[in-house]
Length: 243
Image 1 (tube, helix red, strand yellow):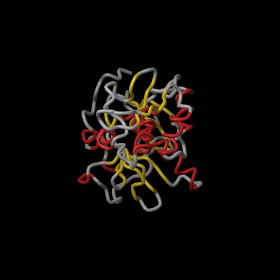
Image 2 (cartoon, rainbow, N blue to C red; image 1 turned 90 degrees about the vertical axis):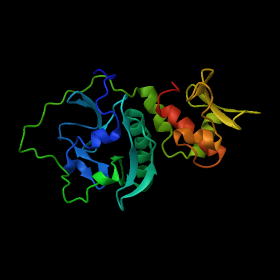
Image 3 (spheres, rainbow, N blue to C red; image 1 turned 30 degrees about the horizontal axis):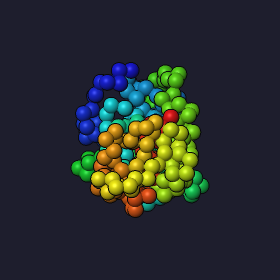
Image 4 (cartoon, helix red, strand yellow; image 1 turned 180 degrees about the vertical axis):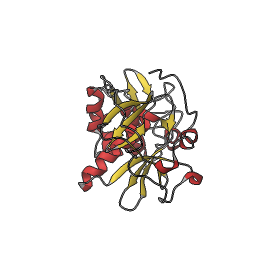
């Protein structure tokens, strides 16, 4: 694929393009044919990640706004910042798997959150595709997965870990090439920052660090400075910057 080609310049451009029957309440939930198994697929020259019978945008050059939803009462368990679709989906999927492991069921799911005016009360929602109207397409699997084994192992290591736990992992032994570094006399009043191979992460100028205002730039103003830097480290790992 030509991953440099942007089709949908913003999330809303995608929401208004898809059929309304694929919007469940306030989330995109577009089903796939049974021939698509869980994993990365290219459908109609567009990248998706399939999970439990539904497809989710996984485009590295377009942005998505994902939310983690409690399927029991449809409350939002986690709301993620708009980000590159593959990164945003990975971030949600890590938490989804951790939450579902804790409850012992597939209770939580990820979904792109649509704008309020595009929400659907459920009366027009179609949970499964109409397989009678057209033959099922022949899927073409991608031979090399976009998430390599080393990255998947790092992502798996985060499952079930709190932001403070992840801070501790980065401070004690690091995650791959990434470590948490303690700062002294930082001009931004940051106590902690993430470093990989002598480079500050995720911004080379060191402007994204544990202080609340700086951490808020990437949606990680989540508590005290240790929790903030744990959140930042998690994002850096999921983005594949710690290999």
